[in-house]
Image (cartoon, one colour):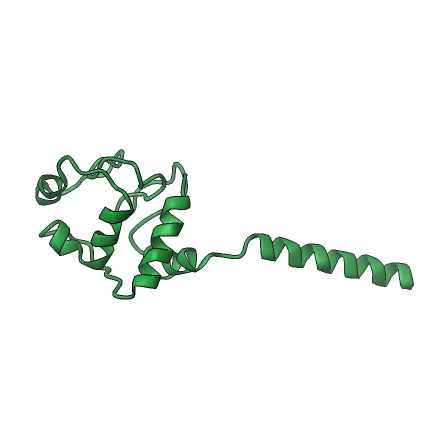
Length: 124
């Protein structure tokens, strides 16, 4: 009986460790709640209504493989590369960055924007 309890306890602790290892960051939780309706985040995943965001930072804007951008977006984003500052402006007001964009999500809270940017930056 004692051996069974020890085994059960050990399995429970392993399960808790696995859950903790997969705990989502605040930015990942926000992305899952607000962004997955349009975007995918995993390497090699197909684009959704919006482009896949894996490896976004450091990538030329309007250049996600296999995604068709509007002419307005391509013109507005010409010669821009995604970095933290551009993503900050984008999440604050995408229409100010690229008028006519179909992006529907805006984040007014600077802490939440920073968490989203941290998460997107981690996708390498």
